[in-house]
Every structure is written in C-alpha cells, then in structure tokens.
Image (cartoon, rainbow, N blue to C red; front, side, top):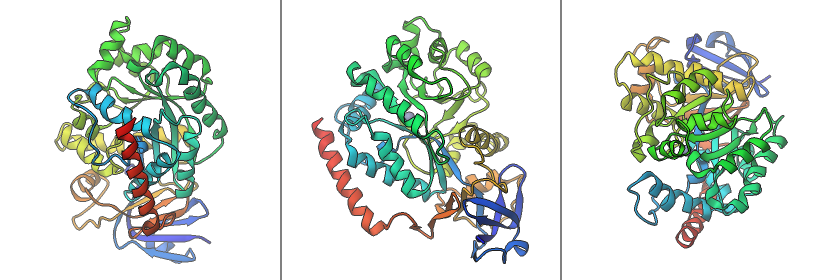
Length: 429
Ligand SMILES: [Zn+2]
C-alpha cells in the first residue's frame, strides 16, 4: 500500500487531464492515476490537495547551483561586458569555492528548486580551486534531498592547462561511477568555446567515452561567436561538430549568436538546446531566435529555481501573444519529457509505472481550466506560486513549506555561515 494525493487538477500538459484527479503512489513509482472518487481509498494515507494544480515534476535543464550563495554579492570590478561579468563575478566566485561552500551552495539551490516543484536539475558546476571530488559533494546534496540530477564540471582553460587533466577526469570518473544510478548521472561539462583551445577540445574528444554527452554554453555572447570565426569556423556549433562533439546527447545552453551553418547543424544533428530567458535578459546578450530553433527546453542558468516563472519570462520576453501558448505548451511538457527520458528512462510525464516525480503547485484555479487553456493558467495564474507539495521518487520531499530532508531552522545558520566564508574568500582570491 502506498499513499494517494487527490482532489487536484491532474494534468501532464499533453493528453492527461482530470479536473478532480488523484494519483496513487506505491514505492518510488506511480501505481494509478484517475478520478479522486475511484482512488481515494486505495492507499494508507490520503492527501487532499484542495483543487490545486498537479503537474509532472518540473525540470531545470540548465542551472548553476554553485552560484546559489552569490545573491547580493558585489562584483570585484566593472561588469559592462559579458566577459567582465565572468571575470569579476563568476570566475572569481568559482575560484573561492571549497568543499564546504560547494555543498551548502548545492543544498541552498536544491531547496529553492524543490520549493518550486522541481524534481530534476541539469547542473553545470565550476569550482576551479576545488576540482577533484566536487561532483561527489554535489551528488551527496542530491541524494539527501532525494531528487534527480545530471551533473558535470565545466572544463575550461581559464584555470591553467595544468589543471585540465583533473577537470576532464572529474567528469569521466563521475559519469562512469554513476552510469547505473537512476537518480543522479554525469555528463561531460565544457565551459564555452572561447575558453577552450583547439588542443583542449582535442583532448576532451579523445577522453570522452562515445556514449557520454556534453553540456556547454554555446553562442551565449557575441564574443563566443567571434572567437570561433577567428579560428576559421563558421560559428560555435560548427566548431563543436568539427571535434565530433555534436549529437543528440549534446546540450547547448543559450544558442543565441550562431551562423547559418550552425543552425543547419542543429537541424541535422539534433542537439538539445536550452534557452535561459531571464539570464539572457540579465546579461543583455540577446535572445535565441525562436523562428530558427523551434525545439528547445528551458533553464534558469543560476538565476532561480523557479521554472514556472521562467516559462512566464519566456512568454513575456518572447513573442508575447496568445498564439505562442501552443509552442510554449509543447516545449514545457512534450519536449521536456522527451529530453528528460533521453537521460533518465521512465521519468517525465505522469504515467503508471514511471518514477513518481510530481509537482503540486500552490495554485487553485477558479476560472474554467482545460488542456486548451492550461498555459494561460500557468503564465497568468500560477506565476510566483511556490509548490504546495513536491514528490520525487515516490517520496514527499516538500509539503506546506517544510522540507522532508532538512530542518530549515538548523540548516539555515549553516548555509549563512558558509555564505559568509565564501564572500570573505571571494574578496581575497
Ligand atoms: Zn550557464
């Protein structure tokens, strides 16, 4: 026997829609989905959701948990250009991270995500002062929280070529160890073309097992595009392709500054494109061309753990009219589900037999709701809504503002202490 959540508007955003719906969860899987009247007595315990919106667990396809303790920090120099933002803020921060601050950054970022219904995070990690073992520290935070992650270390020449071996091995070892782990897996992380030399890309391509994908910032800023052009490539996607690094397990974050050939390669080789609308607005790097790239998923790029807010930003910063709802529904539910299951079989969507990863948003629709107007409810109704309940792998990890895996009163002083240590070190490195 398991437990039942019911009296919710249950939908997968694709074809499943039950206005007074319920889900039976047994072990770590979904055992049944149906009307509340049919399922309410099938478990040991019944949770009444009071008409709230129930969705598949949300996925953040590009995040930087290492940035979670940087809120409010002053950059160490000017931030007028994209490269200055990196040099005076993020690269300095990642040099300052140590084992303890990596862990508490992950804990804090995971809590923010779980509180918004996120059950899977594709994380892109950097800590150039603490490379070896960094991914296992983050994995520990995921394991304790009970949620899922695709982890990598962002390889870059910026830390000096002598650390390159450590950076590559950190990725490959983690990928190898967690190949059969259903919850947390590895992928090869690359920072961006413009901090990776030809020699480094060759070394990465040589060291990477065939089936291992890559996760890279691609064409985020004009600087990345110009760098590749100077080397004789038509653009950043073309350069990755030249090293055999482009396939359907390649994750390209941003994809803004691209050549005609880059777009053609994306159509042909079908890498996964992740758009990060809030981060792009924050860094003023431009927007992904949605007329050229029609299939993509969403990430926050370290800006927040809130995917519904990110969806709303995509809408507001994108085309901004009602005809866009269908495209957004497709990417938020269909494409997300397809991409997630490429890395994590039996995850994504609400389906009997799948892992029970479920988001119950703290939003009770009062106007008529159906599959047809679901995006209107998400973008104009559920905006700013935290989760009421988040279930990952069949376990209630967050409910009514409380985390099952952390006592907020105890962990918050630890996070605060770690943040203070990190900020002190940030000024010195
Ligand atoms: Zn990023």
